[in-house]
Amino acid sequence: MTPEFLLTCLIVVVSPGTGVVYTLAAGLSRGARASIVAALGCTLGIIPHMAAAILGLAAILHASALAFQAFKFAGVAYLLYMAWRTLGERGPLDVEAGAGERTASQVMAGAVLVNLLNPKLSIFFLAFLPQFIQADDPHPLGRALLLGGIFMAMTLVVFVGYGLFAASIRRHVVSRPGVLRWLRLTFAGAFVALGARLALAGR
Image (cartoon, rainbow, N blue to C red; front, side):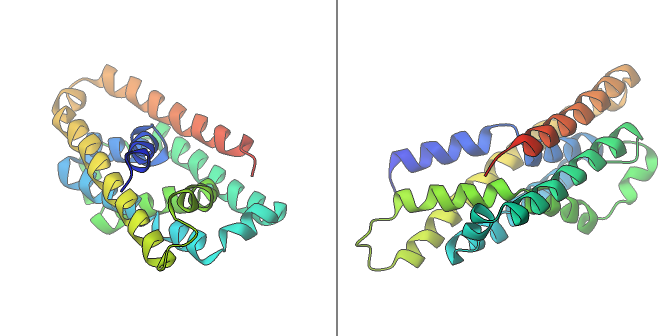
C-alpha cells in the first residue's frame, strides 16, 4: 500500500464533512455508544458509492447532469432538514430526556443517509481508486475492493475517535444551557454550510 494512498485517505477522512458533524452530534447528544453506531453507519454509507464506482455506475452520475442534480439536491434537502431538526431541538443534537429513546437503528439509518445522499462520494471513488490500480494488475477488482476497504476502515477509526471525544465532553455540554444553545446554532449552521457546498458542487 503506497504512502500516498494512505495519506490521501487520511486527509479526506479527517476533513470535517457531513459524517463528522453527524457523529459529533451523536456523541454529544447520546453518548459513546451512539457515536460508535453513528460512525459505523457513516462507514456503511460509503459502500454504495464504492460499489457504484467499481461497477461503473458513478460514470452515469458524471455523464448525466439530470441524474447528478437529482441525487445532489436530495442530499441538500436532507442536510437542510437536519439543520432544521437541530434548531428545533428534536434532531441530531437532542439531549433532552427523551433523546435516549431514539434507537440505535434510527441513529444508524440517519448516518447511512448522510453519506448515501452525497453523489460526490461516488465521483470521488471513480476518480480516486483508479489512480492506485496498475493497468497490468491481474486482479483489478480485488485491488479496488482492498483499497476501498482500507478507506472504510480508516473512516470508521477516525469517526469513532471523533465521536468518543464528543461523548467525553457531553456532561459539560449538557449541564450548560448556554453552551448547548451555541452548539445547536453551530451544528445547524454546519449542516446548512455543507448543504450549500453540495448545492454548488459540480460534477
